[in-house]
Amino acid sequence: MLISSKDSEINIKFPEKKFNSFVTEIGIKDDKDMTKEQLRKILILSIESFLNGSFSTDQLSSICSKFWDQSLKVGEELHDIFDAGSELAFYIRHPKSLSTFNSFLIDLINFYESETEKPN
Image (cartoon, rainbow, N blue to C red; front, side):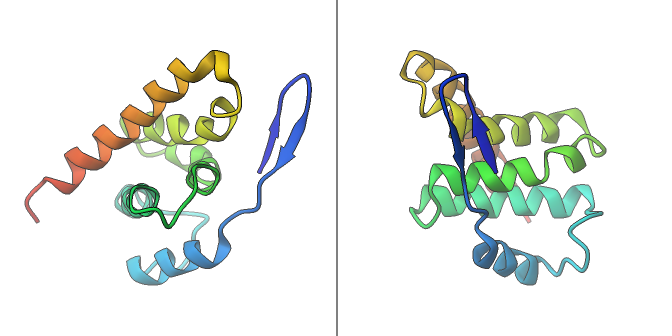
């Protein structure tokens, strides 16, 4: 994933190994055409990994960026969360925009809490 601003570019490596463990756990056969439920589970696992310290902000942002396009197909609410997550890696590097970073992070945490509190 490439993060660009007028002053610099940063290339962030996609967390392939961790992502593959998510794919296995969820039982995804094709990550190019995922269902709404599969995307929701990838997002929950990614946020959970971030919250427990096994994912960095950049890794969470990379996962969200990877599925940003696919999330357009499954509904605005889920797409908005992938969009917020995809922006974290950019805004954390721009101190004048930390309120935007905080807003996006709160959106992700609120989504995670609302999804994990639902009865199975």
